[in-house]
Image 1 (tube, rainbow over the protein chains, first blue to last red):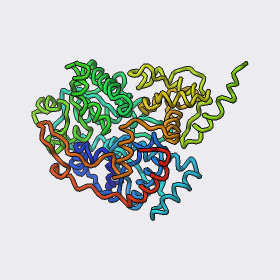
Image 2 (tube, each protein chain N blue to C red):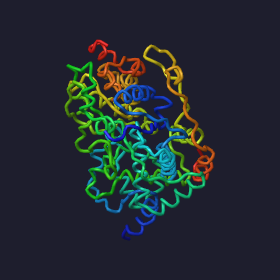
Image 3 (cartoon, rainbow over the protein chains, first blue to last red):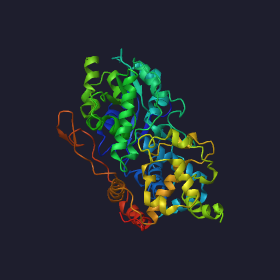
Image 4 (spheres, each protein chain N blue to C red):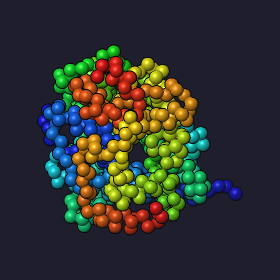
Length: 294
Length: 170
């Protein structure tokens, strides 16, 4: 493991709402030899502005990269949306020199220097590629035996494939490898490479809910005991809004424990549920905790 | 009189291609692979990405803006992967969203709210108090998380974005 020190970029949803992700990252990664450095001055990656003005979104992302560049550290990105924003911005700035000049000028006015070489690492990558499955395996004190867990990377961990993504779009296996390393089982299922529907929420909340509910139904049909993701938006849709889906579609079967990847790794390392923010998961995670006797 | 498709297609396609991105609506031959795999089309039957691309090619901007249907896109990028012509319908759809805003057509309320918050605070929302499983209201502080850092020079992006968003009444 070469890099041990990472600049922690939280984005906008994790530090304002999805606290369980931040809590579990801060609890788990240092125990696996990663030093997290606080990112002063960071703001949203601009993803919510993309539909209104794509250039404004690129400017906001380029700003985050410029600020990150000052630390001369690789940046750890937790949210799938932030990851796609920062990497797509880097791609566009490399591809279009005119855009690059324009954005550089905007940043220069603010005393910032455009930095298109920041090393971007996503949660899936830090666990699978930086720390590595072997090291995770060696840290396990409580194997997640007799559990079948679905990997749900989320659409922006896979696509667009013009830019490097944390998982392979056609055959995502990194989360699967981690699930197996923790002692649980997993398998492929239809729509594993699908989308939770979060971006549809502003247009049609009901359609968005139907989309995430369909995912949970498929996972249950395939006999999964739980699902794991690494995206705060997928968590919002699959976990936080699970009860809404249950009520809207009047289907008691829409009930499945949903975990963040870092929460699952933390449990297997013997961390207590409250150290991993598991009291904040709205889905029935207590079913799994009981089975694991934690 | 024959329909002059060439003349019709030029204006809107040129506008769409001017938005930052990799949109290539002109290559679409209407195989509808995008629609068959689309996340949104599965739950919103009237949403058909191949049709949006066709209307864009034909220059039907008013019809597109009036329907606002492009806001239904999940931006999951499946259509981009499955398109045999490298059209990437999602890119055209994002460009249409941008063009709509530029022409003063308001995006859905929740998008306006999110954008307002990002411009105002640098975050999608202010740090919220959330409920635990036992219905207890907790803040970042109570969860032992460090205080959120103040973003770097917020007035700079506020100034720039409000200039850029002149056409959008957020």
